[in-house]
Length: 216
Image (cartoon, rainbow, N blue to C red):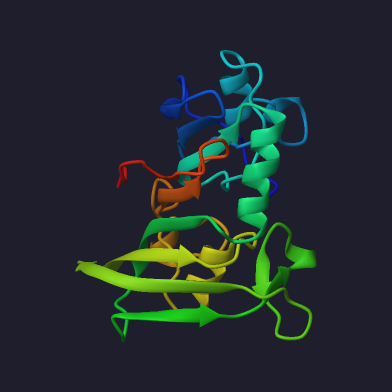
C-alpha cells in the first residue's frame, strides 16, 4: 500500500437528512470519513461537512473505499446517544456488494472472529484464537454474469468485516484493493455500498431509516 496516492473525488457531500440532532450523508467511495495521517490526507467527509456545519461530531466511520449512508451528530447529547446505539448493536445496517463467483446457497451467516494482520496492516484476518467475535448475515440477490449481487447485514462492526467475511466464503468483493486478486480486483472502485441504516432518533426516540441509492 506504500504506492497508494490519496485522490478523493471532488464536490460537496450529498446530505440525506438534517435536523437539530442529526446529519446523515452519502459518502462517496475514495473519500476518507475522517482525516488520515499527513497533510495530504486532511481532506475528508467530516472536514467538508464542518465547512458548512461546524458543530458536526463523529459517530461511526465507513472505510475509504466504501460508499453510502453515514450519520453524524450535531450535539454532544446526540453523539453520546448514537454512540451507545452502535456500541450496543441497536442500529441495523444493510450493505450491497458485488462479489466474484456464484454462491452455493441463497443465504447464510459467517461467524468468524477477526483481528489485525499486523505484518500486513491495515489488512485484517480470521483468527479463531485471538480474534474478536464477528458475524455477518448474507443473502444472494441475483447473479450478474460471473458475479453475484448480495445484501450483507453485519451484526458486529469489526474493521473490514464484510470484506474479510466475503473473502472467507471464497467470493471476494469486486474491486477490493486489499483482498481481491486477479480479475476480481480490476474494477474502478470497491463494489461495497452502505445502502441503509436504521436507528432511533436521539431526541424523539422514533425509529428512522436512511437510504442511499447504490451507485453500481
